[in-house]
Length: 215
Image (cartoon, rainbow, N blue to C red; front, side, top):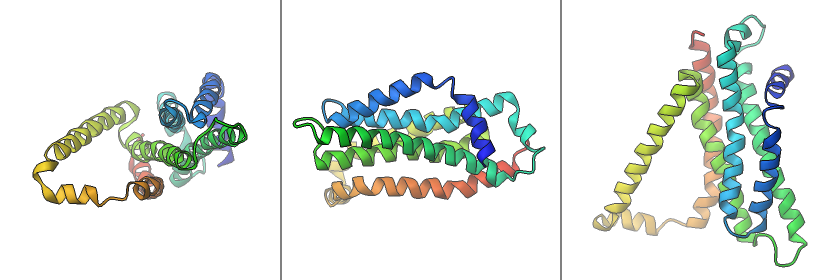
C-alpha cells in the first residue's frame, strides 16, 4: 500500500506545486468568514477530490492497470489505495481550513462565527466526499473521459428534476409540508455523514468492477 501511494505521489508532486498555493489561498479565504467563504471552502475540496481521479487518468494513459496485474497485489488493494489517496487529500484540505480558523480565532473581528464554522466544514466535507464516491466507481467502469460525460448527464438530470419538483411544489401540499418540516441545521450536519457512508458503500462496488474489468 505504501508503495502504491508513493507511486501516485511521484506522479503528482510536480504537477501540483501550484495546487499548494491555491490550497493556502482557498483555506485562508474560507476561514476569514468574509465574502464567499463557503465557495472557497467548497472550491478547495473539489480540487483535492480530483486528485485520485486524475491519478487514475494518468494510470489509464500509461497502461498501469495492465502492468499492475504482474504484481502480487489484489484488486482490493489497488482500489483501496485510490480511496486512501482521496481521503488523505481531503484531510489535508480540512486541516488547512482548521489551521487558518484557529489562527483567526485569536484575531478580533476576523474568522467565522461558531455556526458558520460548522456549516462551512459540513459543506466542505460533503462537496469533497460526494463527487469522489460517485466518480471512483464510474472511472473504473467506463474510464476517465466517459465517466466525466456520465457525471455531467447525471448532474443535469438531477438539476432538472429538482427544478421541476420545486417549481411545482406550491401545487403539491405534501412536498410543501415535507420541506417545511426539515430541520435545515440538522440536515446540513447530516450531509457529511451521508457522503462518508456513500463513499464507504461504493468501495466494494469499485473492487468488484476493477476485478471484472478487462484492461
